[in-house]
Amino acid sequence: MRVVAAGVSGFLGTRLTKVLTAGGHQVIQLVRHQPSGAGQAGSHQAQWNPDAAELDVDLLAGADAVVNLCGVGVGDKRWNSSYRELIRSSRVRPTELLAKGCAAAGVPVLVNASGIGYYGPHGDELVDEATPAGSSFLGQVCVDWEAATAAADAAGVRVVHL
Image 1 (cartoon, one colour):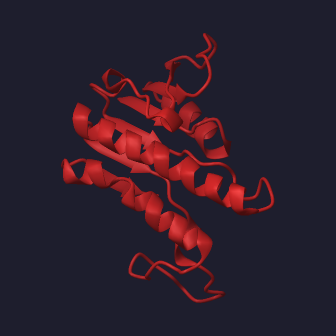
Image 2: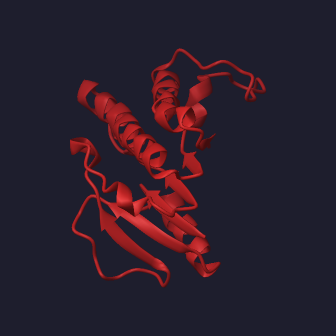
Image 3: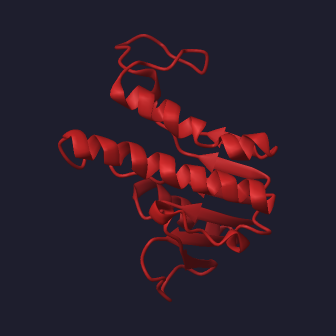
């Protein structure tokens, strides 16, 4: 399988890349910095700039799936107004760009991160996919994040929100 993956430098992404490459799959890691020659067998890097809406759609051509785990850490810093905007924009902008790219390249599956914050605070109450989004800041970020996949969904791409 050929997988194009964004936001894979963190906890989940590094492990996902290792599992995929160990299974014999090819992983193209989208990175914001100059691509390095180093990497795991079956994995290489390609540069993109989601803040400037720069993505070579040819990188997505022939991919079996695109995985998007983009977003700054919610526990990394205090949430002042500028960091709140970064939490939102670091998720929504890359997702919109990848969704449009998946639609244009005919990628069959987009696996897109979301978050448990979607539901807002519920204490011990059981929540599931039928539970509506919370009105908290993170709940609304998740709503916007998931909505950013609309271009892929409209093009018939199977969109999975984790």
